[in-house]
Length: 335
Image (tube, rainbow, N blue to C red; front, side, top):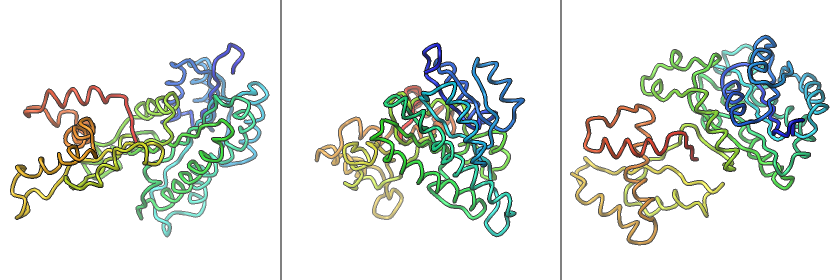
């Protein structure tokens, strides 16, 4: 806690992008902020605006992290939140990227979070059980693309680090949250100009959206989130679909966003007449409840398309119902 009794949050990469957006959101929520990044001019201005503190720190250098952490812990022995949001892009493959940049991608996006956790661990333990660690990873940590191989590799390592420490620190009263953003428009990641696909450009979100999801994860103890949501297309009448909605058996208590799909258009499925009743058998057999079935058949599809293009359902017969679904989903996040 700070001297005035507020929760203390340490945010790395706070001079821009997701880190800056998160700092602003936490300030609105009443946290006392300690901002960390390399650019002192931006840090100082933001810390003044948000009535917080700052430490100049390069998370790629372990000594720099240890020095900054020692200074912060001297002022604040209890740290309620460590948000590891420092990150840099790496838009070249392993055979093309230069050696120094390759090492910096790995140190910033992976090892920086490791050094910060180890250095602030004493303060987090002192604040337990009201202690949280947020690791801002990426969907790139779950897939791999040749043009950004080093970045994906660093994010794979960071994802493993985040999931492993979630289990390791839980008995100590420290909750670790993994946030996997998709395409986010920031200074370091100008997605709207870098992405060639019009569909993917429409999927670009703002740092504020990620910051809202992080705040939701902390307050509601979501262990891992994809922002925006992650969706799965599923054969309509497959009983395995029920597993997507079963929080009791899914890892992390997740309710997956399964989307209705089928072989409509194939020679044996000429229209929807038989497909929907067959899908509803999942409810009749007790595998899904009515709410799950509505999300499977309608709600998840509306969120999938509507969050990419808010006008997608305008002029359709379901415009009103789709608008209601999108309004209720605004600001929410699920695995």
